[in-house]
Image (cartoon, rainbow, N blue to C red; front, side, top):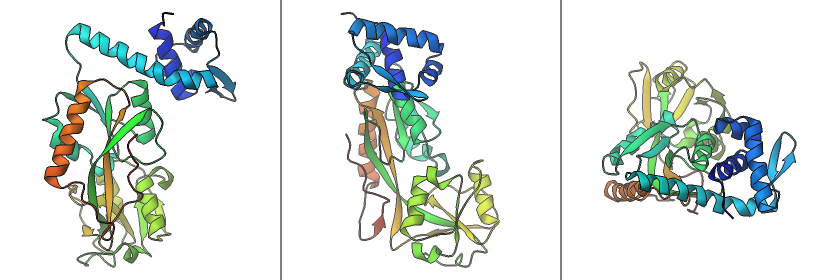
Length: 309
């Protein structure tokens, strides 16, 4: 039985989106063309791969079993094309969590990890979809469960976090603060907290009921909003270079110190040789710069880093 790669790609994309319309847009096809490719594949296999479910579709048992090796077959086909051309393409790496400046960490290792093409993902779900679709090879940001099947990751860096407050905040003059001393202040976020897992878990863990949100128009705009109200505070990694915003102060947090976890994320089975190089360089830099130091008696993580799959 010879599998058609175009049909296989249509199936994998539809299986990841669980929606024929979105999958068709991702592949730049009409929905009719995508449906025909999947129908031909089902006819060849002699089994249904999808069932209609409301506005989308769901995988049948056969479809669930077929998906992992189908992904591997596509990865192998892409690798074969690269080998035939005689040159591996650059590693495509997205980052997310832009307010916390992930490029600072990636820049520390990029020059030693081969040729990289950086991109800018929106958030973890959008980057996850891009990885599973094969649009990118790796991603760098904060990983938190649940993580979709077919992905692997490695913890790269644990970064101490400071409180950022207006110079008119009641505790702005303190040399350091415990998280509970921020009760009574308003945790200000650059968007809805249900999409900002780290800030939400911090507020829940340290019993900070007063929460507010603006619109994410970049770090400078966000910090101006914090500086403009003495009741507000937010959290930023301690060594993020702050823009020139008048009336702003960064105060270290202790007892415990919150840590922001950065991870490298990739699709399991991706054969690109740059993945191993990037992961190895990240591990070496983490050891040299002591990026992974963690003392549960002194530090706080929202949850233990999820075990790599």
